[in-house]
Length: 137
Image 1 (cartoon, rainbow, N blue to C red):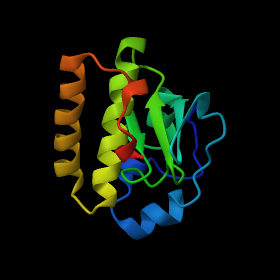
Image 2 (tube, one colour; image 1 turned 30 degrees about the vertical axis):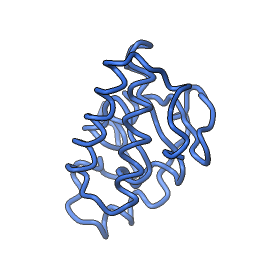
Image 3 (cartoon, rainbow, N blue to C red; image 1 turned 45 degrees about the vertical axis):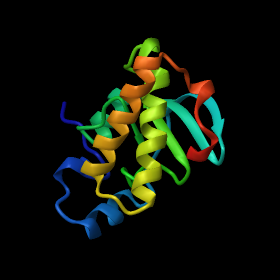
């Protein structure tokens, strides 16, 4: 039996106008799994990664933020429920830092690379999410 969607997978949409048309108000029913809390104005959620890949965006993995993915509501960070508990804090660090850089106008590739460097620093120091600098809020 073939499954029909109300909207095409995001990976098949070729331009920003169609992206907004189909995903401006994406159906997020059953996406949220667990609320992790707030960091400043940001709400951090564990979400159903397989459902997102199936219905919204095939390349979603590990995490994302509202500045990168237009289907993520404003001031939210999503963490894929497929990652391990050990990776959780570092993914949150990465997404918060990347989001901040994207808001400043950096390209995604540059923001992602710098966020990966910041994440690496925390991995080396074994710092946790609780110790995130307030400047990232």
